Figure 1: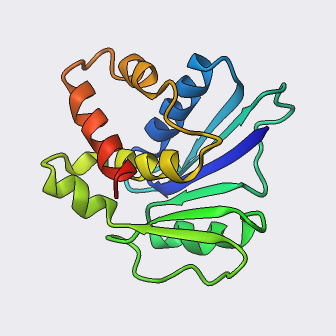
Figure 2: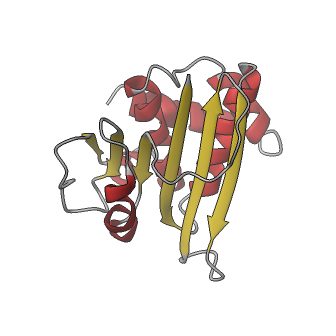
Length: 175
């Protein structure tokens, strides 16, 4: 089983952090993986994307042309990547920041007001984690296994952020 996930938005939205969290989660489960971050020269405010492939077998290339799962946090990313998702794939949209619907009818789409939810929780910088929580629920092949261990690893330098991130995952999962 292989899942190819593309996460995209503006720099500063935690795009690369989300990918890193998925990568550590896969490692904690003993999976094979690739993690390929990409961002424009502007960094914060510029475009950012992260490709994560999680597999039971060796991953031949970190390049993802047609993801199974697309997570988008801004309209330019939805415009750019919507057409690339595999038929039967899944698109997760931050509906607080993206006003339009997915135009394809051969994919499943979820609209999560992740930015608003994160703001309402007092952690406006965790919208990416709210979205990731919804992905973990709706994509059982990715699932919640290993999430707590992975979260502890990626926030190890800021242990006070563990509980906040865990609550954000749970909020998205339960949305």
